[in-house]
Structures are given as C-alpha cells and as structure tokens.
Image (tube, rainbow, N blue to C red; front, side, top):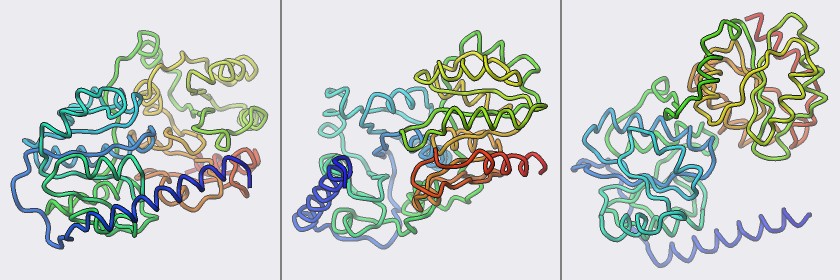
Length: 350
C-alpha cells in the first residue's frame, strides 16, 4: 500500500471515530414525519468540488420554486466553490467557512436556521462539526451508519443513486416531491469574454463534437496520444477542444497538429465552457465536471470512466443521452482509443 492510500485510510478511520464519539454525545431524536412549520431560512453545506456543486443546483432550483420567500444560506469550504455560486440568484447568502471568518461566525452564532442540510452521504470532519456548530431547529442528513443520532431527519436513499437525486431528497423532509425530470442541473451565469461571445456567434459549432482533455486528477486523464488517434479516426468531423487553463498548452498542441480541429478561444470559467457545450452535437470527456455541464444543456455525452462502482453509479451522466466507456482499471488512461471511437460512432449514428 503506497503512502497516499495509507494517509487516506488514516483520515477515513479518524472521521469514523469522530462520528462515533459525536453520536454518543449528541443522540438526537429522529423524526419520521415531514417538516410542516415555517421555512424562513435554510442552511446548506456545499461540497468542495465543481461536479458536486453542479449537482447541488437542482435542489437550489427546487427550493426556490416551492418556497420562494425562503432565504437559502450556503456554507462553502473553499474559495473556488464560493465563487462558483456567487452569481446564483437562488442563494441569499454565501458563508465561506475557510475564507471569510466574519461572515462565517455571523452565520453560526448570530442566526438560527429553520433547517440545516448536510449534503454528504459519508462522515466528513468539517461537515459533522459544522452540522453541530450551526444553529438550526432541524438538522437533516443522508442516512448512513455514521450520521445516526446526529440529525433529526435522515434521507433514506440508496448509496448508488445519482447525487442530484440525493440532494433533492431534502424536499421529502419539507413535504414536497420533485420528479426526476425536473432535477436537471444548471450553471450560475458568469461574465463571458468578447472572444467567446464572437466564437459562439459563428457557424463553426454547427455539427461539431467537443472533446474535453482536462480532468480533476491524474487517474482521470486520457493520454494525448489517444486523443490524437481518436481525432484522426474522424477526418470529416469538426472537433472543438475544451480544456482548463492548466491544460491550455496541450489544447493548442492538438489544434496545431490535427487539421480537423477548429481552434477556439480558451474559456475562463465553467459557464463559458457550458455555452460552447450547449451548441455541440456531442461531448467526449473523462469523468469530471464537464459530464454534468453536458447535463445542464441536454448535450449527449460519451464519458470515460475508471473502474469504480461509486463513480459509475453516483456520478454518471444524468438526464441526457449518453454512453460510458469504462476502463479495465481505476485509471482512465487505460481505456483504448478504439473503444472510445466505437462508442462515439454509435452515438453519432443515433
């Protein structure tokens, strides 16, 4: 076992031990009936990655629709997610736990919320502590053995359910139901550069497919060689390359090397990337936030996934036409180019 796995195991054991201690100390009574009282304010603990943030938006949309006068307070745990949501009109206040201590302490000490919701379905040190520190009449979590006795209400949903549906499970506690087809995520609007605006106004995106070469971790990247093989397999197909700023050099290299690629301006935020994805015929991407951006705009996707059941079930493409190409290992780079080519051909035929 390498050092990274050992550290991860130690952290997991610590979180579980902390949860066990808190369970004995807190021992909250469990409610079985939905909430029926006033709902003036609700506190939601937002997870730390872009994909999780995108999959939280269906709940925000549903809450605002059913309870338009309710103030939604979002507690974030890094600057990136605070900035992602700072233009979301469904949210009243953002409290950045690790970035704005004044706002954070006002949130936990100067206000009592009607409901608090922990979006994680597993024990997390920060989320458990904040679930207890933030003052709320009712605390809601997703059912698992380490959440029992810590929350007034536990959402009973299968661990392998799509995360968007898990988040919308909060609505059951509030006496509302949300149909799956209404749980499509969205992207909060962001500024769009003049270059992207001009690019979107051209006709080059008509009939184009997109490839996203970026990913959230080293095991989720596909190799540049495989991308080149894939691109060359579609000599008549217009292709757009999307990437994060960190992979801009690789994007430019592919654009220079492969004649079928249409050069595009770099995107500076996920919203700009989403506006391009919206116009695509199809998106090919590793398992990353771009899968969920495709869901926002109902764009078909071919997703490249490692062999991990929880990723294949919980974070699969949602409410869109899709194909999943699964690696024989935990690493996306072990997927062959031919497997992806075949999957894309089938999607294009459809």
